[in-house]
Length: 245
Image (cartoon, rainbow, N blue to C red; front, side, top):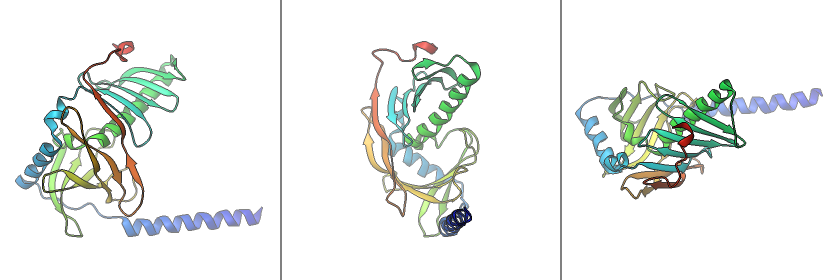
């Protein structure tokens, strides 16, 4: 038994050392941005590149997130269906209300139902953000500034001072000559390492003309975060949200 504990202790020590090395190797301080006209012009250029007006006119979109959640977003009515594991929630996004099911049986206990609704809301906010965060760079509580990274690259830093489920997060967008994002570096509360870089690849043009990226590769790894099964429709043949209307 002592030998087993010793082996476990050595393994834990190695993990701690590796995490420490990773932190000091990859962690970057949040750069200092410069607000002004240049940042606003870059932000507008990004919106045009992804065709925000077409995104705004996209009524219904569904997709499978990087975490494996499946979502239907009725943008016109601000409603969402979120499914994960054996759970399904029909969500009124505006007031975080709705109904929940587990194993296809409606959850009638108020606390259990509300817990699932809150979880679905967090999933939706994060998954919808990764689907198309560019269109949110002019939301209330968002600050835009230009930055120069340690490697000399210039980018647009977007800082979310309020809103969402993790206010205080910042992202530095790297864009091509047309304004289309090619990568972002992120400083977010849920990650202990600041400045991780994710590519924005495999751009898809929706039937409405809006553009979304469907693959994000973590720089320095072979890990790819996909966004899958993206579909749009103009209306439902059978409205899935009838139970909460």
